[in-house]
Image (cartoon, rainbow, N blue to C red; front, top):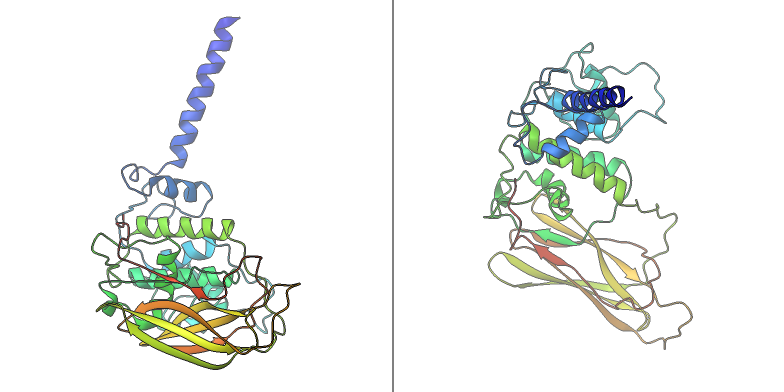
Length: 333
């Protein structure tokens, strides 16, 4: 009786070993993102470098066809809720591509979900780090409205970043999905490797899974602030301290930095009110409220929209502040 049981056990171990080897790419074992690549492969998001083969080529360059397909499949983008008067074709949005190509559906979905891919893009064009970062973050934003930490990552090679992509690069860095190297460089124009792209994609999927999207604000109340001002003070050669001040109806109000967006050489600072705590009453005395943030000295701070905000939790501060990262960034892998 023991021999049949032993044989069954051996067969089971052999089956497990064979099954694991089926899932594993043959060339990712020593790559820093090996585990993430393996998980994406098991989910059917990644295939081999030549469409199903066992080699992934993690150090190889990433084409637009492969990169956009990864993003669309990984974040489960689709055409749900979109009505068409005629069947969409990839050449409607990207005339340099082919309607019958394997990547066509992914690019149609990407176009309809506003991944901001240039119309003249070719499928076999190789993607840079900033390009993949931008399209990845645009895909993330299409999944919902997420609250990002109000920080600004200082890049030593900031001048090399396409201004149109800076907002996406910043979001990728402050979420920890991408990291600067020991010298605080991002290398935006460097071609991204397939392995690094897979690592960013895996962490973005995890971010969506672990981070609840913010509910949309419906019919926001008008801002309670007036006489809003912005002042700038140098901290050092690279960083400026930016203070937003405003007049509020009473001392119960506060102000916070809601978000910072980037347009050309401008850092557009959006603020939102912090409302008085429910159940507390304040003398109706005009009060100055302030919030502080830090931006690169290469950018011009300007005031953006003022959101309606929401009532604070007990203990919320009356003034808001944010931080800056980049002085001790982790090395990229």
